[in-house]
Length: 122
Length: 407
Ligand SMILES: Cc1cc2nc3c(=O)[nH]c(=O)nc-3n(C[C@H](O)[C@H](O)[C@H](O)COP(=O)(O)OP(=O)(O)OC[C@H]3O[C@@H](n4cnc5c(N)ncnc54)[C@H](O)[C@@H]3O)c2cc1C
Ligand SMILES: [Zn+2]
Image (tube, rainbow over all chains, first blue to last red; front, side, top):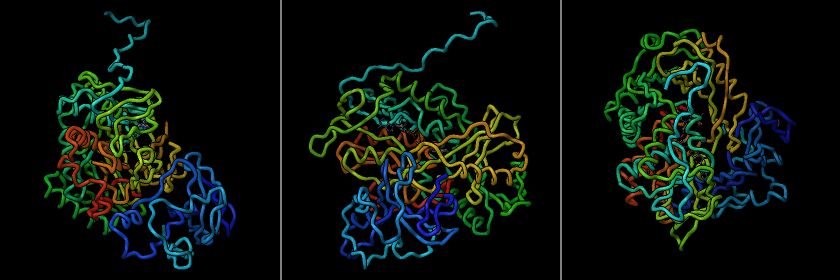
């Protein structure tokens, strides 16, 4: 079981949280301009690395807020925890740029639930 | 030979040889799980293509193939799924003769329990869809459930059992023997089964794959077929394309051996239990996926704990059983809970993945279709709908309702 250090509440058992999949996947800037292939990438393709992965979690049984985690998918070690809307630590900066090349909305336009700080279910 | 009680029996003969890799093959299959081995067998047996290697990084059947709970059924909702899983079930029905090998295939039926009114509606819908597709299915009420499996507690639990779908032809098999049965016949037909051989890269000529780099050197290939389950993203990445796959740990466990108490297979999506009793007598139970992606090949203890709580509520006599062993595999999950099989953006490189938590039952049918795809370069009618392109065309095959493990 993971111990996740919620940026608002401190360390808690994994069971208090829900996983929200890959972080920093921003809504496309101009959705109607996307090709089918680009739209497929936005909807269905997510990184699946062996190693560090930036992902969203929500503290369902605590503060109910979303935040970001860098976790190693091989060792399950949590490398960093940071708030919604923040960038990962410098050494993991590349993880905040998901592959696929769909032009993203700028941060202020983003409808990424990760930044909206909602209580939506993962 | 006479039996001498003071000595252990002779070591049985090896079922296949351990050849050195040749410099090239017509077809190289990456992954020596059920799918890779079945594909190699059908390539040789149905298409006469025997200059084939199966490259396995560990040992044959050491991945999900011998880690699953061996449930075989074909009661999926959509036509495309019913077609491939039912074709597979028909192959299971003759597999022991086809392979000349016992795999303990036992058609003891499967109950998929309904615990809510919505479950009941979904179940009845699925039963009707199954019948239209020639898949044996009926809906039974709670009394019917108790008749088929007397040890089930239907009333005195948080989500009472309101009924179930029942597929009598469903069942279980001994998964490692299935792998060995395919391996043995494939090897007899001339396929090279090469263990301890990890594929570490792809050799390309332009956009065409012409070989693989391995821990045992470079091996040329006319065509390459991936069958690496949870490792597909990693391999696709090396080949230069992406797959819409998320890899999750999935666990199972067994109890110690008991006299026969559980006559069928019981699955519940709602409270999340699936259980059968193996021939030897262990209760075999599957747990849920860990919610996060992972490659650790182990799952979390609390997932097992939740699974046991549900199992004991549904089968009160299990409270007396001890867990003997738990383990995990890494399953390849797609967004529509359906597999991906067919061409990739790289020429002559093919993919078979996305079976997630339910690809054991598909081994014969998928092997047959994938062999056709690798032999001809074209999808078989059974796998044509399961192309990688469906994520772009939107022709998804949403089987979340019929998939056993919620994810
Ligand atoms: C706990 C659990 C319970 C399950 N229960 C069921 C069930 O009841 N019914 C059902 O139908 N399905 C079930 N499944 C799913 C089923 O096991 C899988 O869908 C199926 O086994 C996947 O196909 P495979 O057998 O070819 O995979 P695997 O056996 O995993 O084969 C893939 C192989 O590829 C090899 N490989 C990976 N990378 C490389 C590389 N770079 N080079 C060379 N080789 C490589 C691996 O070592 C592995 O042996 C379950 C799975 C798990 C984990
Ligand atoms: Zn919190």
